[in-house]
Length: 313
Image 1: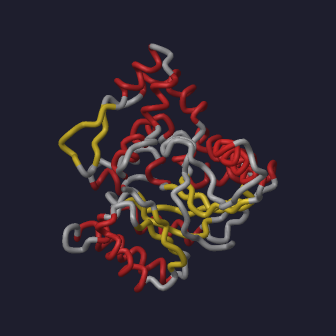
Image 2: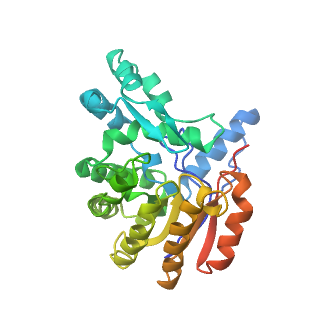
């Protein structure tokens, strides 16, 4: 591939509930009734070689590993976190997770960190905010998660993957709801190095190819410029180089009238990405009211080669 692209939001081992791989594939041998045909189709798709161009690393974290960490480190979790679209209402973190660990209730933990059945982007981000503190700032854990991600891709015969993530959100201090000064102080480089190490370990062992896309975050304009510059620095660092940039966690940054404080830094950073000839991919459709504005961005950022679309009814 060598560039970023669109596709379904198939992050799917944790926060989107396990929906997984992307490739199309159709009908295998006929089964007995509809269920048999469906099962045969799934089996056929699982054997086919696939390419996945839109998968979020943090949305594909290994749930077994998250559960083990939760049982050991639940007391280190913050009591609450703040969500940027509702900063006056704390979102509980430690209490719900601790209840799961005290009762050894793996199923309830699964329901906390997976948003299958939810119908909004914000609901999905709330799931991420439960398990992010288990991983944030722990490079050895992040490296192992990246390795396990490659192992899972290989097991599903995904031969080429472009995996995206926000290095800032996984870094020490990388809170989506922090103040501007704290956000500006976050160092994303150790996270990129940890992810790269884990991916390289995986691709060497499992003989598949994986490259990276770095994401800015809608609600953290302080991170946009450093995402672009870091992507430029790592663009030729193969294997597992950075092949593009994106903006995740919402689309408010597209709306110059309603959110000029988000629009200007992201627009400036991605104009810089265009100058550097970085590949650019943009989420569109997760919040349909912004789709027209996304098209405007795509028109001016001529290096865009795909719109990653998640349709939420």
